[in-house]
Length: 326
Length: 45
Image 1 (cartoon, helix red, strand yellow):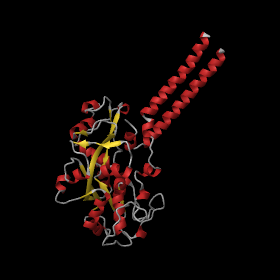
Image 2 (image 1 turned 180 degrees about the horizontal axis):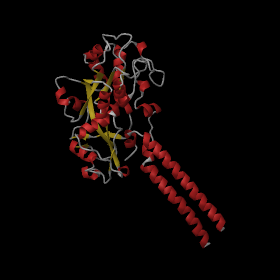
Image 3 (image 1 turned 180 degrees about the vertical axis):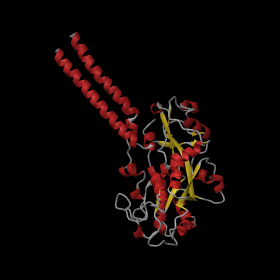
Image 4 (image 1 turned 45 degrees about the vertical axis):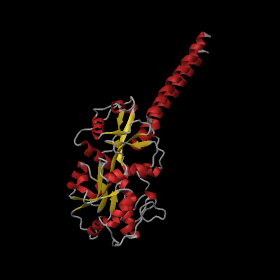
C-alpha cells in the first residue's frame, strides 16, 4: 500500500511539474501573443479592404477634388498608419480605372500600391513608385536611397502625436519624456521607480526601419536603447502613432500615457502642448520627371487635401507653426 | 501496482509531458514572432 501511494504520487508529481511549467509559459508569453484582430490586420497592419479609394463602403474621408490627374498618374505608396490618408487622396484626384485591387493586394500595374514604410522607402529608392506618404526614414533607408541615386524630397503634409502606451491595468498614467528615455536606455527598469507596481519594465520596440521605430530613435536623441532580457516577466510599454492605435487598430486593453502631464488628445496636439509630435510627408525623388508629380504635390498642400487630412483624424500642417514642430 | 506497469505509466507521463511542452514552446515562438506590440501589451498586465 505504501509503495502504491508512492508510485501514484510520483506519477501525479511528474504530470504536475509539466503542467505547472506549461501554464507558466502560457500565462507569461503565449497568452499575450494571441492576436484577436482580423487576418488582414495581422498580415498587413491595416484593414486595407475597409479603406479602399473607390469601394462603395469605404471608411476614407471621401472628397471630390477640383482637379483630376491624367490617365497615367504617379504611382503612390505609403505607410500603414497613413493608408486612409493617401487612399482618400487617390479617391479625390486619381481616375478610378488607374487603381486595381484584386481582393488581396494592388495589382503591379495599379497606380496605388501599399508596401508599408519599409517597402515604400525601398520602392522609392528603386524608382518603382513615384511618391509615398510616410514619416521620416531611418538613416539606413536614407543611405539606401542615396546609393540607388534617389535624392528624396520631403513635403510636410500633417502631423500626429507620437504616443507611449501600456496595459490598461497599469496604474501609471503619465511619464516625463526623460523618464521614457531612461526606461528605453535601461536606466529605469522597474515600474515602481516611476510610481507603478513592483514589476520589471518590458520596453518593447518595433522592427528596424518601421516608421515608429525611426521616430523613437529620433526621440531618444542619440541615446542607445537596451532591452531587458527578463522584461517579459513584467509589464510592457510600447510606442506608436496616436491615430494608428486609437482609430485604425481598435484593440481594447491598452491606454495611452500622458507625457509631462499632457494627454495626447487632438486638442493638445493641435495647440502644441503635447510634447512629441511626428510630421508625415509626401516623399519623392527630386529627379523624378513624372509630368503630374508637381501638380499632385501642390494639390496635397491645398485646402482640399488638408481638409482630407483633418477629416481622417490627423492635424493638417500649418506653415506658421511648422518650425515649432519639426 | 506492478513495477512494470508503474514504469510504463511514468514513461507515458514523461513522453506526453515533453511532447506537450515542445509543442507549446514552438507555438509560442511562432506567435511571439508575428505578434504586434499592441496585441502583446493589450493581453499583458
